[in-house]
Length: 510
Image (cartoon, rainbow, N blue to C red; front, side, top):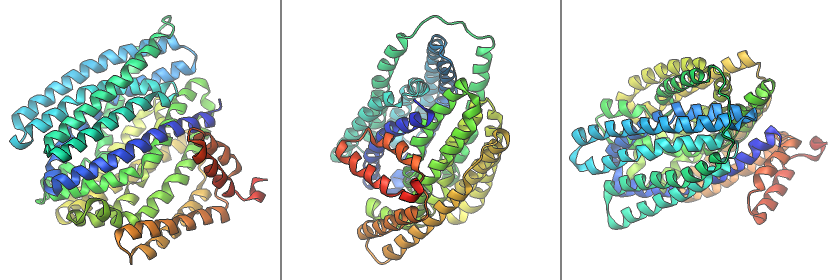
């Protein structure tokens, strides 16, 4: 199967998984927010973020090494060495997860507020299965078979949904939320770990460890962790710490988190495609390095095609969506939720170029770009938060993201001679702005529900109409999208394929 078809297939599977996860978690997050309110949500979000940071840090170094080197050796046809890499990194990750969980648990039992102690302890315990689970998940990505990650994700998110439903009905409060998080991560770990282990155990055990492999893996792991530390400053709501200490209103933490979470939903499509592209880029490094630049440029185009319209149109509909979903108690987040879609847009484009640099073991550029962006983020947020609260935090985050992504792509273009389709990107941006203005012109006069329904519908008509008139899609796009729609039920895939065909003007297709 060609690289583009592999990416399309994996995008489809990962997209289906992410869509289900997003649908369920959206409603559970709304239920939690409405039940706890902005004040309680503010403190709980702060503690949850700390535990997530610890889990993510531990999930980056060794699991990233697992994916990179397993994919490289699988691409060369050496599954014996890939098998060895999996088991070695799994043992290392389990030990690291134990240390991280124990250390943070001691902190929670000593310093957490009495009201939140049990809930935060449950959150901390969820770190262990989450960290160990990363290795199996990345091993599956390395095989370019993203569908194997789907059962664990789906079953675990449904378990979380049931836990949150029980929490709301039985009024278990923050303890119920913490227990639900622990349940989700344990289920995800169990459902994913054993099938992955069974598949890898069936691989050939014979391997000749290449000279210097351990040194390369260790260097890559440390660079990944270092990269993740600075990445979290730019990408993972580090502004919550500044908000907690520079703003006297704890609700600002909740407002920022709600706005950030809503904007993050828009990144699902780019995360789906980015993960599929990442798997292929790493494997392609082991197959044929000469095609990396072309794959990266193609990935950029598809990210622009899907992400720019979604984020720009969402600017016009974000405020109505906030009021409809979260209620008037979160009205203070209207401005920040309006800005967030644009300020989160750069994140949609990071995966291909970051994977390109990592596959060539040039992570130093990723780290340098992110360190610089982190300094920009902190400086801007520090300046604006005292006066503007959550809005200031959002501006700081956006400044950091634009800096990081811009620098990384500049480096990738220079080092690998990547040629990006700037004219098509300009067309997509113009069309998206016109569609967003259409949505705003209609939504401003309506109640939240009708604003979203009618404003959103009008913007889509303008968007797809201009896509057709300005010849944005190319003939080969239909075949690639058809691979993704192939996993959908025929009753859905059929009309969708017809619609995609209509978007390509006949004379252009010729």
